[in-house]
Length: 158
Image 1 (cartoon, rainbow, N blue to C red):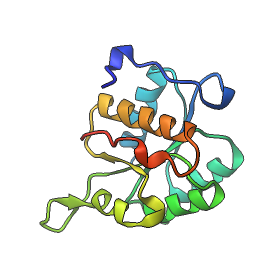
Image 2 (cartoon, one colour; image 1 turned 90 degrees about the vertical axis):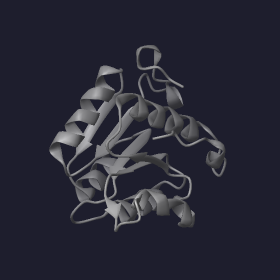
Image 3 (cartoon, rainbow, N blue to C red; image 1 turned 120 degrees about the vertical axis):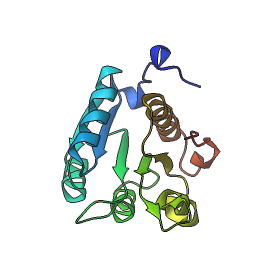
């Protein structure tokens, strides 16, 4: 859908470059995402925990948040609900690679069943850079739509 070499970040809300907050407790994962998005021209800030991510979210403006679902302290679902209380409908990408039992399903599979998280874009770990860029493009597009219209955005295939 969005080839990596041809992808250009859109410029939401009059900002020169989209600003993304990446919240993941795994340093190597967070750093890889930050570097991949910076290489594509995004302004990216990393946070190594849910509480620090919430603090950064409150202290600055972001266009998208990318959050891991399994982190110590504040899990991703609680984190996303907190972000959405502060800014309803805010575009969020949830990511996880943790399998739940032997079902082959992840926590990402259950997000559509939670009313206030049904429009969260899901990104299955491990993912390729193009999958990340597609998820970011979908989140930026969702953020440009009126509240409640984000369910029309298709989920990237992982």
